Image 1 (tube, helix red, strand yellow):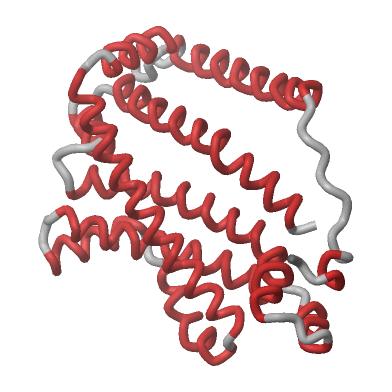
Image 2: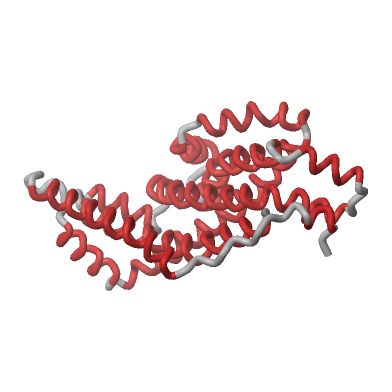
Length: 267
Protein backbone atom coordinates (compact mmCIF):
# COMPACT_ATOMS: atom_id res chain seq x y z
CA UNK A 1 0.00 0.00 0.00
CA UNK A 2 1.35 3.43 -0.87
CA UNK A 3 2.37 5.82 1.88
CA UNK A 4 -0.19 8.59 2.54
CA UNK A 5 2.53 11.21 2.06
CA UNK A 6 3.22 9.84 -1.38
CA UNK A 7 -0.42 9.26 -2.25
CA UNK A 8 -1.17 12.94 -1.58
CA UNK A 9 1.18 13.84 -4.40
CA UNK A 10 -1.08 12.17 -6.95
CA UNK A 11 -3.23 14.45 -9.04
CA UNK A 12 -6.61 13.73 -10.57
CA UNK A 13 -6.86 10.63 -12.75
CA UNK A 14 -6.56 11.11 -16.50
CA UNK A 15 -10.01 10.75 -18.03
CA UNK A 16 -10.43 7.89 -20.52
CA UNK A 17 -10.20 8.70 -24.18
CA UNK A 18 -13.71 9.27 -25.53
CA UNK A 19 -14.90 8.40 -29.05
CA UNK A 20 -15.11 12.12 -29.83
CA UNK A 21 -11.46 12.60 -28.93
CA UNK A 22 -10.53 9.54 -30.98
CA UNK A 23 -12.34 10.92 -34.03
CA UNK A 24 -10.74 14.32 -33.49
CA UNK A 25 -7.31 12.69 -33.60
CA UNK A 26 -8.20 10.45 -36.53
CA UNK A 27 -9.29 13.20 -38.93
CA UNK A 28 -5.89 14.99 -39.09
CA UNK A 29 -4.19 11.63 -39.61
CA UNK A 30 -6.43 10.75 -42.55
CA UNK A 31 -5.96 14.21 -44.05
CA UNK A 32 -2.17 13.97 -43.70
CA UNK A 33 -2.07 10.51 -45.31
CA UNK A 34 -4.30 11.67 -48.16
CA UNK A 35 -2.08 14.69 -48.73
CA UNK A 36 1.03 12.50 -48.80
CA UNK A 37 -0.65 10.18 -51.31
CA UNK A 38 -1.66 13.07 -53.58
CA UNK A 39 1.81 14.64 -53.49
CA UNK A 40 3.50 11.27 -54.06
CA UNK A 41 1.29 10.46 -57.05
CA UNK A 42 1.95 13.91 -58.52
CA UNK A 43 5.70 13.38 -58.21
CA UNK A 44 5.41 9.89 -59.72
CA UNK A 45 3.52 11.20 -62.75
CA UNK A 46 6.20 13.82 -63.45
CA UNK A 47 9.29 11.67 -62.80
CA UNK A 48 9.41 9.80 -66.14
CA UNK A 49 8.98 6.47 -64.37
CA UNK A 50 11.77 6.87 -61.81
CA UNK A 51 9.33 7.23 -58.90
CA UNK A 52 6.76 4.40 -58.69
CA UNK A 53 3.12 5.42 -58.52
CA UNK A 54 0.65 4.29 -55.90
CA UNK A 55 -0.76 1.62 -58.22
CA UNK A 56 2.69 0.09 -58.78
CA UNK A 57 3.40 0.13 -55.05
CA UNK A 58 0.03 -1.48 -54.29
CA UNK A 59 0.68 -4.18 -56.91
CA UNK A 60 4.10 -4.92 -55.40
CA UNK A 61 2.60 -5.00 -51.91
CA UNK A 62 -0.03 -7.56 -52.93
CA UNK A 63 2.56 -9.69 -54.74
CA UNK A 64 4.92 -9.65 -51.76
CA UNK A 65 2.16 -10.47 -49.28
CA UNK A 66 1.07 -13.45 -51.38
CA UNK A 67 4.60 -14.85 -51.55
CA UNK A 68 5.23 -17.51 -48.92
CA UNK A 69 8.90 -16.65 -48.35
CA UNK A 70 7.93 -13.14 -47.25
CA UNK A 71 6.54 -14.41 -43.95
CA UNK A 72 9.68 -16.39 -43.20
CA UNK A 73 11.77 -13.24 -43.73
CA UNK A 74 9.30 -11.25 -41.64
CA UNK A 75 9.42 -13.68 -38.71
CA UNK A 76 13.21 -13.73 -38.87
CA UNK A 77 13.42 -9.94 -38.81
CA UNK A 78 10.89 -9.65 -35.99
CA UNK A 79 12.84 -12.20 -33.94
CA UNK A 80 16.03 -10.19 -34.40
CA UNK A 81 14.14 -7.00 -33.61
CA UNK A 82 12.72 -8.44 -30.39
CA UNK A 83 16.12 -9.69 -29.20
CA UNK A 84 17.78 -6.35 -29.93
CA UNK A 85 14.92 -4.38 -28.36
CA UNK A 86 14.89 -6.36 -25.11
CA UNK A 87 18.67 -6.47 -24.73
CA UNK A 88 19.23 -2.79 -25.57
CA UNK A 89 16.33 -1.65 -23.37
CA UNK A 90 17.37 -3.63 -20.30
CA UNK A 91 21.05 -2.71 -20.60
CA UNK A 92 20.34 0.92 -21.50
CA UNK A 93 17.87 1.50 -18.66
CA UNK A 94 20.21 -0.12 -16.13
CA UNK A 95 23.25 1.88 -17.24
CA UNK A 96 21.26 5.12 -17.52
CA UNK A 97 19.76 4.68 -14.04
CA UNK A 98 23.20 4.04 -12.51
CA UNK A 99 24.54 7.13 -14.26
CA UNK A 100 21.66 9.19 -12.89
CA UNK A 101 22.34 8.08 -9.32
CA UNK A 102 26.16 8.07 -9.35
CA UNK A 103 28.15 11.09 -10.46
CA UNK A 104 31.39 9.11 -10.58
CA UNK A 105 29.82 6.40 -12.75
CA UNK A 106 28.32 9.07 -14.99
CA UNK A 107 31.72 10.75 -15.35
CA UNK A 108 33.13 7.38 -16.41
CA UNK A 109 30.34 6.47 -18.82
CA UNK A 110 29.53 9.87 -20.34
CA UNK A 111 32.45 9.89 -22.85
CA UNK A 112 31.56 6.35 -23.94
CA UNK A 113 27.91 7.29 -24.45
CA UNK A 114 28.85 10.41 -26.43
CA UNK A 115 31.17 8.36 -28.63
CA UNK A 116 28.45 5.73 -29.08
CA UNK A 117 25.96 8.39 -30.16
CA UNK A 118 28.46 9.93 -32.59
CA UNK A 119 29.54 6.72 -34.36
CA UNK A 120 27.60 6.24 -37.62
CA UNK A 121 25.46 3.11 -37.46
CA UNK A 122 27.10 1.35 -40.44
CA UNK A 123 30.46 1.55 -38.66
CA UNK A 124 29.30 -0.88 -35.97
CA UNK A 125 28.56 -3.52 -38.58
CA UNK A 126 31.61 -2.83 -40.74
CA UNK A 127 33.95 -3.14 -37.76
CA UNK A 128 32.11 -6.23 -36.50
CA UNK A 129 32.42 -7.87 -39.92
CA UNK A 130 36.12 -7.06 -40.17
CA UNK A 131 37.01 -8.09 -36.61
CA UNK A 132 34.58 -10.89 -35.71
CA UNK A 133 33.24 -12.36 -38.95
CA UNK A 134 29.87 -12.61 -40.66
CA UNK A 135 27.93 -14.84 -38.25
CA UNK A 136 24.43 -13.72 -37.27
CA UNK A 137 25.32 -13.26 -33.59
CA UNK A 138 28.07 -10.83 -34.62
CA UNK A 139 25.56 -8.66 -36.44
CA UNK A 140 23.17 -8.86 -33.48
CA UNK A 141 25.92 -7.77 -31.10
CA UNK A 142 26.69 -4.78 -33.31
CA UNK A 143 22.99 -3.97 -33.50
CA UNK A 144 22.55 -4.00 -29.72
CA UNK A 145 25.66 -1.86 -29.19
CA UNK A 146 24.36 0.66 -31.73
CA UNK A 147 21.00 1.05 -29.93
CA UNK A 148 22.15 1.09 -26.28
CA UNK A 149 23.57 4.68 -26.26
CA UNK A 150 20.20 6.14 -27.28
CA UNK A 151 18.41 4.34 -24.43
CA UNK A 152 21.13 5.26 -21.92
CA UNK A 153 20.87 8.93 -22.81
CA UNK A 154 17.11 9.04 -22.20
CA UNK A 155 17.22 7.02 -18.97
CA UNK A 156 20.12 9.04 -17.55
CA UNK A 157 18.33 12.32 -18.28
CA UNK A 158 15.12 11.10 -16.63
CA UNK A 159 16.81 9.90 -13.43
CA UNK A 160 19.02 12.99 -13.10
CA UNK A 161 16.01 15.30 -13.50
CA UNK A 162 13.98 13.59 -10.78
CA UNK A 163 12.61 15.74 -7.95
CA UNK A 164 15.35 15.64 -5.31
CA UNK A 165 12.88 17.10 -2.83
CA UNK A 166 10.95 13.85 -2.93
CA UNK A 167 14.17 11.99 -2.12
CA UNK A 168 14.59 14.23 0.90
CA UNK A 169 10.95 13.72 1.89
CA UNK A 170 11.47 9.96 1.71
CA UNK A 171 14.39 10.19 4.11
CA UNK A 172 12.52 12.49 6.51
CA UNK A 173 9.44 10.25 6.62
CA UNK A 174 11.62 7.13 6.61
CA UNK A 175 9.64 5.52 3.84
CA UNK A 176 10.29 1.82 3.28
CA UNK A 177 12.75 1.10 0.49
CA UNK A 178 10.07 -0.58 -1.64
CA UNK A 179 7.77 2.43 -1.25
CA UNK A 180 10.55 4.77 -2.34
CA UNK A 181 11.47 2.71 -5.42
CA UNK A 182 7.87 2.14 -6.52
CA UNK A 183 5.87 5.17 -5.40
CA UNK A 184 8.49 7.93 -5.33
CA UNK A 185 11.10 7.11 -7.96
CA UNK A 186 8.95 4.78 -10.07
CA UNK A 187 6.20 7.36 -10.56
CA UNK A 188 8.73 9.92 -11.77
CA UNK A 189 10.71 7.80 -14.20
CA UNK A 190 7.88 5.62 -15.58
CA UNK A 191 7.13 8.03 -18.48
CA UNK A 192 10.86 8.29 -19.21
CA UNK A 193 11.17 4.49 -19.18
CA UNK A 194 8.33 4.17 -21.70
CA UNK A 195 9.89 6.88 -23.87
CA UNK A 196 13.22 5.03 -23.72
CA UNK A 197 11.48 1.78 -24.72
CA UNK A 198 9.87 3.54 -27.67
CA UNK A 199 13.26 4.95 -28.68
CA UNK A 200 14.83 1.52 -28.38
CA UNK A 201 12.16 -0.05 -30.58
CA UNK A 202 12.40 2.71 -33.19
CA UNK A 203 16.16 2.50 -33.52
CA UNK A 204 16.17 -1.29 -33.31
CA UNK A 205 13.76 -1.46 -36.25
CA UNK A 206 15.76 1.03 -38.31
CA UNK A 207 19.13 -0.54 -37.60
CA UNK A 208 18.02 -4.18 -37.88
CA UNK A 209 17.12 -3.48 -41.50
CA UNK A 210 20.58 -2.00 -42.03
CA UNK A 211 22.19 -4.97 -40.30
CA UNK A 212 20.36 -7.44 -42.52
CA UNK A 213 21.17 -5.47 -45.66
CA UNK A 214 24.88 -5.42 -44.82
CA UNK A 215 25.45 -8.81 -43.19
CA UNK A 216 22.59 -11.28 -43.73
CA UNK A 217 21.15 -13.13 -46.76
CA UNK A 218 17.63 -13.35 -45.29
CA UNK A 219 15.23 -10.97 -43.62
CA UNK A 220 13.27 -7.88 -44.62
CA UNK A 221 16.42 -5.76 -44.73
CA UNK A 222 18.09 -8.26 -47.06
CA UNK A 223 15.04 -8.21 -49.33
CA UNK A 224 15.07 -4.41 -49.43
CA UNK A 225 18.73 -4.47 -50.42
CA UNK A 226 18.01 -7.12 -53.04
CA UNK A 227 15.24 -4.94 -54.49
CA UNK A 228 17.68 -2.02 -54.53
CA UNK A 229 20.20 -4.06 -56.53
CA UNK A 230 17.47 -4.92 -59.04
CA UNK A 231 16.39 -1.24 -59.24
CA UNK A 232 12.89 -2.06 -57.95
CA UNK A 233 11.89 0.94 -55.81
CA UNK A 234 8.27 -0.25 -55.75
CA UNK A 235 9.36 -3.44 -53.96
CA UNK A 236 11.57 -1.47 -51.58
CA UNK A 237 8.68 0.80 -50.62
CA UNK A 238 6.29 -2.16 -50.30
CA UNK A 239 8.62 -3.96 -47.87
CA UNK A 240 9.04 -0.75 -45.88
CA UNK A 241 5.27 -0.27 -45.74
CA UNK A 242 4.81 -3.77 -44.31
CA UNK A 243 7.12 -2.95 -41.45
CA UNK A 244 5.61 0.50 -40.96
CA UNK A 245 2.19 -1.11 -40.54
CA UNK A 246 3.57 -3.60 -38.02
CA UNK A 247 5.26 -0.83 -36.05
CA UNK A 248 2.02 1.16 -36.06
CA UNK A 249 0.13 -1.84 -34.69
CA UNK A 250 2.72 -2.18 -31.91
CA UNK A 251 2.45 1.53 -31.18
CA UNK A 252 -1.35 1.43 -30.89
CA UNK A 253 -1.58 -1.91 -29.07
CA UNK A 254 1.37 -1.55 -26.67
CA UNK A 255 2.85 1.91 -26.29
CA UNK A 256 -0.31 4.02 -26.41
CA UNK A 257 -1.88 2.10 -23.46
CA UNK A 258 1.46 2.23 -21.63
CA UNK A 259 1.59 6.00 -22.10
CA UNK A 260 -1.88 6.39 -20.61
CA UNK A 261 -1.18 4.04 -17.70
CA UNK A 262 2.19 5.58 -16.80
CA UNK A 263 0.82 9.10 -17.23
CA UNK A 264 -2.03 8.27 -14.86
CA UNK A 265 0.27 6.49 -12.39
CA UNK A 266 2.87 9.28 -12.32
CA UNK A 267 0.32 11.97 -11.39
